[in-house]
Each structure stands twice: as C-alpha cells, then as structure tokens.
Amino acid sequence: MDILNVEHVSQSFGNTKVLDDVSFAVPENSVFGFLGQNGAGKTTTMKIILGLMKPTGGNVSILGETVTYGQTKTNRFVGYLPDVPEYYTFMTPKEYLKLCAQITNMPSNTIKKSVDEMLELVGLANANKKIGGFSRGMKQRLGIAQALLNQPKLLICDEPTSALDPLGRKEILDILHQVKGKTTVVFSTHILSDVEKICDNIAVIHNGKIALSGSIQDIKNRERKETLLIEFKSEKTLKTFMNLSEYGKIENHAEKTENGILINSTDIDGMFSYIMNVMSAHKIIPSKLEILEPTLEDVFMEVIG
Image 1: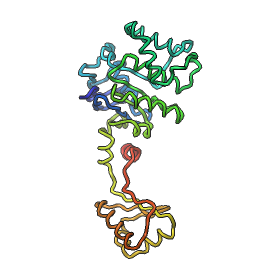
Image 2: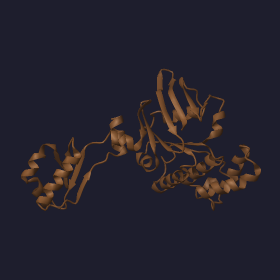
Image 3: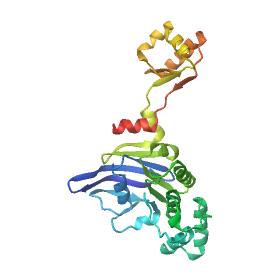
Image 4: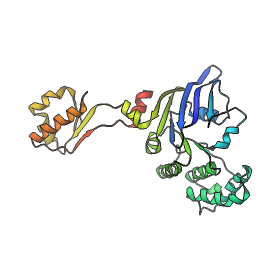
C-alpha cells in the first residue's frame, strides 16, 4: 500500500517552472529518499505535500485523502521536521514537547508518557538545560521527537542531516532507522551516503523533473556495469599476469589501475570464470577479485551529469 502519492505535480513562479510533472509514490512503512541537488525542487515539493503551497497543477494524496492548500486536514497523519527547526529557546525539551502536545489536543493523561518516550527515543531524556544551549544536532533530534509525538503515519524530514557533523548525522540516521516499520519516512536530502544507509526506495529530482525512481537495489541492478576488478599485492605480480599469453585475449577489455586491472565484459560471469582458471593454472593469487556494484553516487552522477 502507498501512503503518499504525488501525481503530475507542477509548480511555477512567474515564468520559472520549478516542478515539471513530478510523480512518485511512497510505500507504507518504508524509508523513502527524495534526492536532488540544492535548488532541484525538493523543498517546494515538501511544502506542497504539507498543503503549505498551492501547486500550479497535479494532485497529492495521503492515505487516499487529497491534500488541499490552506485546508491541511491531511496533516493529522503527518509529522514534519524542517531543515532548520525553530524553538522557544527559554524552554527545556520536556517543557517544549508538553506544550506541543497540549496545542495538538493530546489527551492529558497520555502527555507525560508520550513526552518521556520521545525524549528517550532521541537520546534527550536527561537533557534538562534550556533549548537555547543545544547544539545543532540536539535541536534536530528534538525536532524529530516533536514530529513523532502524535505517532504520525508519515514523517517528512527536509534535509535533516545537511548541516551536521558526522556524529550528528549518525545520530539522526539511527533514530530514523529505529522508527522504520512504525511510521513511513520521507527523507529529503542531497547526501547520498545517508540515503544508501537507511532508505528502501528513492526518487531523484533534477531540474524540477523526476529523473529516476524505484527501489535502490532495482535501480542499481538496472544501472549495473559489467566490470571486474582485479588487484594484486605487488607490481611484480601484476606484470606477471599482464605478460601471460592468455591476457592477450582480454587485453582490449582491460584498463590498468594503480594496483590492478578493470575488465569490462558483456558476460561478466564467464569472464570471472576465465580469469580464475588462468590465475589458478599459473599459481597467481590476487589480493582482490570483485564484480563491481554500482554505488548510489555512480547512479546519481550519471542521472544529473
């Protein structure tokens, strides 16, 4: 079941078209990566999904209900973490979450339990100082706690790790991984390594259009390059291999690297078997023999390049 459907959405500001026929679907209980360079249209799309901006054309629905600009009934299903969340900095995190719970009419007998659970989830249970003294990473974690307070069906995170150091990014990714299966996460970012760590499905937006979408593994399989990497411990062993008469049969498909060889083939399994037999016959032992998998960065660069 798809929890979010974005169908043929366009958005223009004057003569500038920011979104051009954008369509994608987000499966329930998945972590969905929405990828694109800065200025590609990610935040504009998020605002339309939240009903904060009226699209020029197209339709967005959450759990089958149409999102209507200015009438944000569908936001009862949604938790939202903006890229730069704002707070009442004179409050402690517990005070702030209690206020948020009261504003959203959470039953008073469940507020304390819910607040405590969220603070525990994001690692702020013992953070009793005022929010004004928080680091950027702590503020992002508090933002996730606030977004999850009402147990939303859909959590939208707009560039949640973009300004964080490696430790802060890891903390945010660990939290999002923990809530996987309990809620659906849409994770907007340009940091490809973060997406590869936690996302099941992605859509890549480029110049306002969806350039690629699907599961990460399916996309990698579609973009797979039939390449074999062979590395050796020494230059001497590499030269020995390259001087074999059998190497002449693959020389036109080979490219020398610093420590080894890259071999391209339309029959990578057959090439792998041939190389193994040749090295076995000559008692040559490689330090690495690997069929290369495309990375998400490889795919992304090919799409936007």
